[in-house]
Every structure is written in C-alpha cells, then in structure tokens.
Length: 145
Image 1: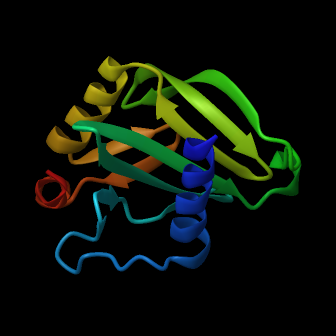
Image 2: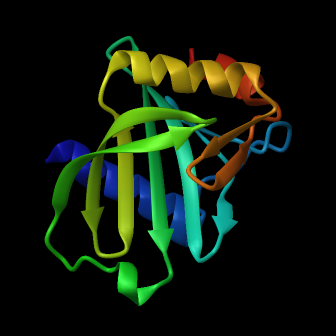
C-alpha cells in the first residue's frame, strides 16, 4: 500500500503540478534518488516514466493520466497484471488504476533490465503508443548511481 501511495503521489507531482525541476542539460528530472522523463502527451494521455534506486536495485515506474472521463475507474484502487509493448517487445507489468491514473511496474527483474537497456541504448523508447526521448538519459542515470 505504501508503494501505491508513493506512486500516486509521484504521478500527481509529475503530471499534474510539474513541481520537480527538469535538468536544463538533460530534460530529465533528477531528484533525491529518482530520475523522471519529461512528460509525454498523446491522444488525451499524459505520461512520465521514472527510475528510482531503492535497496541497491533500480526500479522502473510509468504513470499515465487520461483526460477522458470514460477511462475513469472510480475511487477504488484496482491492481492487475497486464502486458505492455516496449519497443515491440511485450513486457509483463503490475498495473494499478485509480480514477484516471494508471501506474505500471515491471513484474520481473528481467523486465526492468530490458527497459533500462532500451533507455540506455536507443534514441527513443516506445511504450504502448507513447515515445520517450532518451536524449541525455545516460547523463541523468549517472546521477542516480
């Protein structure tokens, strides 16, 4: 439950208020053990992805907020598992939904490593239909380690 609350809080800060300052060099948010992507917007969806270092491991999270009322699942938290496409590869994710917010975390360490490698080595990462720029990602990642 703590993770859920933290994820929702981070998503709210990134997506709704934009209170973290993006690095002028990278465009990525660098904040106390966490790096976050610039916002990606498409077809009524606003999303951010983040990498956080916790207990020596890197944790990937993606948060999406829809502006469509039809995507609202209500106040009750819904937890499921669902695959998402990352650069053409299906990755199994743990998904949490509440209201119009969805958050995703890879179900396996292999999924996290695949995502990290894609961000480190590609010019862009396509998650579902959203394209994240990886410009200067490695520079921001160094600040996380």
